[in-house]
Picture 1 (tube, rainbow, N blue to C red):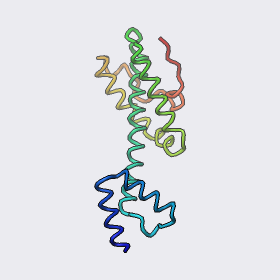
Picture 2 (picture 1 turned 60 degrees about the horizontal axis):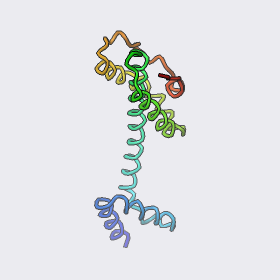
Picture 3 (picture 1 turned 30 degrees about the vertical axis):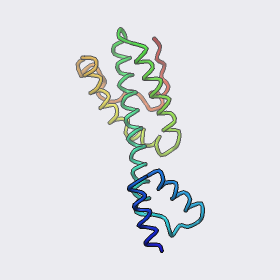
Picture 4 (picture 1 turned 180 degrees about the vertical axis):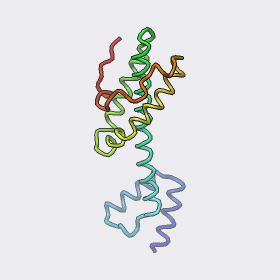
Length: 149
């Protein structure tokens, strides 16, 4: 019975991940832990964690890029840049509200800043020396510094 259930769940995972998740939740609610598809559950949870970390890093990089452009090209400031800063902050604030992803944001801040500088150089045409070599902002400053047109 367990082998057949495991095979069916494995097939369901491959065919319809959302239906598989619903089935996993149903089994957990019912206390049927022996029937869970543990190999795929482990894979799914690991992928979710990676996806969440990638999203935090991506949003942080985009936010830093726009803050750099805002700081170093005041004559080119636009509502679009301002909107991007606001949106990325809002989304990032939701992501880093918990401890684990906040810790991740703190850990990747230097790398995100380096990538943001590369992007800002391309976007602005300014020389690399224009931008500080190390991130001049703390995570809290990135999340709260005032930007006005």
